[in-house]
Length: 119
Image 1 (cartoon, one colour):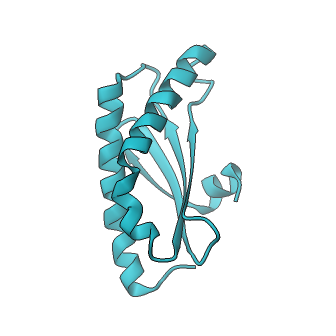
Image 2: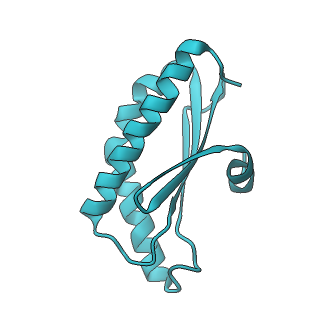
């Protein structure tokens, strides 16, 4: 699934200055796919966009284990994480938001696993 399809067909949640588009599916060949985006309209300088994406990727890398029990149940998750602020947040601020996002995803996805209402 491409970014455009995930934007149009996926579900979304927003915490702080980060918006997440996600899709959960069953029986796929991958566990988790994650993409990071920072719009050029908000940050003209590529150095700034790359710094923001680097901070989001590092935070994801350190906390993705929190979703491992969900992805071990033959479920795949596709995510696009979009930064939506014209100011550059510190790593700690981004990290705090990413932890909240992962916790929110856990609370959304876990009940749906028990209902077997996945695609």
